[in-house]
Structures are given as structure tokens and as C-alpha cells.
Image 1: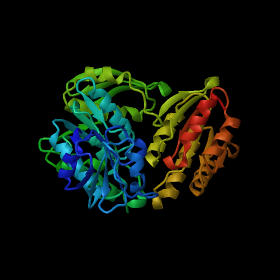
Image 2: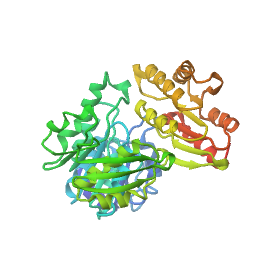
Image 3: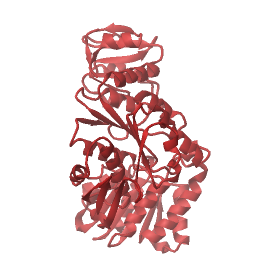
Image 4: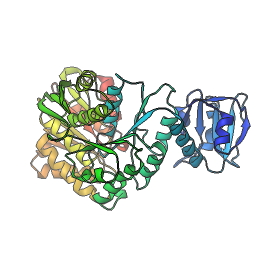
Amino acid sequence: MRRTASEIARLMRGRLTGSPGVRVTGASVDSRRLKEGDLFIALPGEHADGHTFVGQALTVASAALIREGAACAPPPPGRALIAVTDPLTAYHHLAVDERERRDWRIAAITGSVGKTTTKELLAGLLAAAFVTGASAGNRNSTLGLPAELLSQPDAVEVFVAEMGMSHPGELDLLGRIVRPDLALYTRLAPAHTAFFKDMGAIVEAKAELLGHIRENGTLILNADDPFQETFGRRCPARVIRYGSPDAPVHAERIEDLGLDGTRFDLVTGDERATVTFRPPGLHQVENLVAAAAAAWALGMDAGAIAQQAQSFEAAPRRGRLLRLDGGIELVDDSYNASPLAVRRMLELLARASGRRVAVLGEMYELGELAASAHETAGRQAARSCDVLIAVGNEDAQTLASAARDAGLDASAVHRVPGAGAATVLLRRLLEPGDVVLIKGSRGVGLDRTVDALMREGVA
């Protein structure tokens, strides 16, 4: 984005105070993330009202979007305030306008598992052929994604946007803002089930994006996912499927290299190329094949895709392999957790050499499915690890009990209340040559456990 405060005020029919000519080049709803040139959008939050931080924000930001009547001090010289009736609606309107005025293509990624990794992969692949931008980190919500869209440099030719949702209607809103040229679905699975009555409701919420794909757009679907079977008939987009052997984009001759990744042949239409892929886990093959399908749809060939994929490393907290002293290998997947994602990482751990230690935090937002999901994870852990540390409260106890009932020696099963206690226990338990998986929902805070172990080198 590159606009003046007065241009933004006119577009949003807002009242401008301060410098009309100040240049705005990005946006943020979080005052802690502000950069020079940003527009700060002051919104009421769960714990604080953004209007409280307007004065502080304008020490960095060019302008702030505020609610009409809010008690904010006049802006300092060279800054501006734009007052509107509803800052959130105005913010979304600005993002819609930015999307429409730019000469770029947007690839949107949604699904239940692997979204962020697939987004990072696709952006990395496309960088070989296009000036590429991507939404940062987990900024995939109705608050974060519009700011990412508004903060892209003018030179960007393709923008890769991750779209998340935890409630019905969110993908409909994001779809109306982003209107993607290409939409890619990763696998659908139970997640955020506290907010949905059943899996069918999750599928319908994910399908909200279909109606917003642009005319002559492309829809990338997982051919192995039965929940996506009807999606191709629900919009007029060109459909490309990936994953199954009869899909135009798939993997053949897959060789599992354990924690060193995988090697396989990538097939895109009539082309094929051999890929050595560093992120560990067979599920990462599916992520790469999904990204490859989108890159192929946007004009890249199998050879170029394979060459770009060679240097990819898993994103921080999302299955990245770390090494401690004493030959201890740690798989940091501490960013988040859902039942399918936990199963996939336990399958990776089961194939590892050495003593296998699983540190599993509770899975949040599962509602009525929580007890059964943690029981299942406990049984899976009993088949996959030699030592289990379940982190959290009641659901962690359910997980630990299920692992013992499934045959894991009681002396190897531990339940601790939080990340700090998990760190203390790991310091005592870890031995040279161990392989450690750390995974849990974000709120459990197991990233702090990973960071503590990395600072110390070894427990």
C-alpha cells in the first residue's frame, strides 16, 4: 500500500485530524508490531481497547484509524488520525480496495492441518519465478490477514495468503476481502470443534471460500480427502487435484529418511523430478505436493519446483529438527496441536532410532471431542514412544492414563501441570541419543520448554 492519510480518509469517509499528506505504506492492528509508515487500526480487544495505545502507536505509525468520538489526543506533527463510525468495517473496506487496485494474483490456502507449512512452501517455490509476498507467521484471521495484504510492497506479483477460521462466517468474510485467483485446500480434519456441532459443520465453514474465487480462477483440492469430494462441483473454477496416484500432481517412489526428511519423485502432469526434502515426516510430502500443485497451476514446471524445494526447512515451531548436546535430536512442533497433527507427529517419532520421548501438551478448543481425542492420542503415544510426558490438566491426565492402559510402562508415563514443570522433568530424564518430540496447543506454552532446552544445550 502506498497512500496518503487524506486518500484513506476520503475512501473511508472518515474525519482527518493532523497531516493529510503523511504517507501510509502498511497496516497493523497490534501496536507492538508497528513499523514506520503503518496505519494503526485501533480496535477493542479481549483484554484492552486499542484506543489506549494510539498515542504510543503514533511515535512509530504514520496514522491511526480510530472510532468517532474516542478520547484521543491530537496527533503529533507529521502524523494523522482518521475517525470513522466503525474502524473494523473501515479497515476491511480499505483491504478490499487495496486488493482490487493492485495488479497481482492472490493464492489463498486454507484447511485444517499444514496450512502454514504449505503457505511457506508455496511462497518459497514461487519466489523462483515471481516477486512473491506472503502473509507472515499465523496472521491468517479476519484481523491479521487484511493487515498483511495492506503491507505488501508494490512490486509483488503473487501474494500467498493463509486463511484460518475457528467460527462459521470467518472464511466468507476473508473470501470477500481477498477474492483469490487460486484457492488451495490442505486436508480437512477435526479442529476447533468446540465451535462446531460436527465435522459436517467444519466442512461447510471451510467451503465458504469457494464462492469467492475469482472468475477463471483455480481450485486445488486434496484428492485423498473425502471431505473435499464435492467442492469442485460447487464453484466454476478450474479444478486441479493432488495426492492420489491418479491425480495430475502426486508423489511416487517415496523413501522415508526418518528425521533427515524424504526423497521422492514429484509428478506434475507429464513431467517428473526427484526431490530430496529436508523437513521430517511423511506428512510433509503431502504439504509439498499441495504447494507444487498450486505452483504448477501458476506456471512452474516440475524441475523448477524440485530445485526450489531442496533448500526448504520447516518453519520455526512447526516440525523443525533441532540438535542438542549429547546427540539428542528434538523435533519442535510446539506451535499448535489437533488430533490429526498429533497422530502424524507420533508416526514420525515411532520411526525414529534411539529412545523416543514424547512431550504432548493438551489440545485446546475440541469441546465434547476433547476426552476421546486425548484418549486416542494416549493410545497412539503408547505405540510410538518409550517415555511420555503429558502436559496440562484434566485432558493431559486422560492422555497419560490412556497410554498406560494401552501398555506403556507406568514408570515411563508422566503428567505435569505446565511447560515449566515439563522443562524441569526433561532436564532430569533426557539421555544422550534421545529423540524428543514436543507438541501441544499454543496456550500450553511448550515453545518455552524448547527455548529453555536450546539455551542450555542439553537437559
